[in-house]
Image (tube, rainbow, N blue to C red; front, side):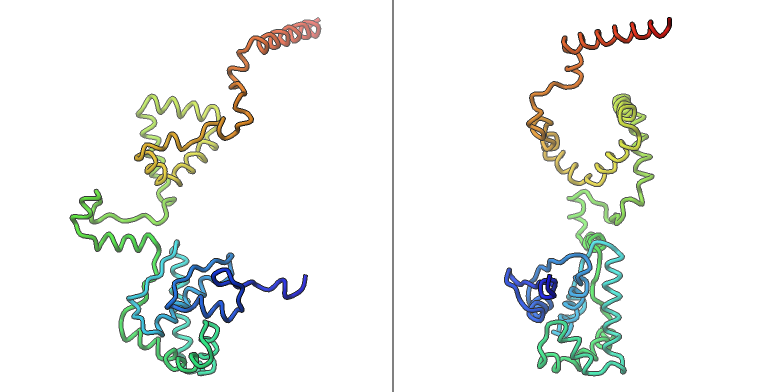
Length: 278
């Protein structure tokens, strides 16, 4: 394999492009883009670069919203933006350095030279304005929307004004399972089903199933409310059509031929036991 064959491939709208053309498109805040890349390819770098470019283009910090999944990722993005702003504003950072950084973020040489002074002043400008870029998790953003929502809307949706969204449900696992077991113990039918599952499959396997159901609780609740939950689980014959004509094991054991075979086997075992006892 040659070096050319191992280089990263850059495409824009399905067309292979050079690296500079790719970053010119991906980091341009005036364009709406979807970036697909493997883990560690620099998607966070690119997203923060788009924020930096948007600020240089005149966007106010409070006009920018970046959303990610975890608090850790949000913190890393926030830290990276602050580090860049501090670095580019430092007296030790030359215009040549700023130009090189802007070119790496998709600007041509003329554009980079024109914006290099503004890049050096950007940190002070943001600090003077007193507003920062909104970099949040989905949960934090939704919580902010709930706090700003009219009381009439919250009442219509059945939501409490002081409610808080849980970012990590696993932190509440002990309390959830305590309530679950209390509900099971208080219902004879549920308790019988629970004990049957434990007896036939073990507590470990049952806990895995319950955890999987908990992870999909929103989908399960929505499907149940829509009346599609039961039908959403395909039958065994639909999943394995080649086994659709086979009898259930319990039915198979009750068939005359199997019962005759078991009776014959029992007779052999009795004779063998008698021979051993002598």
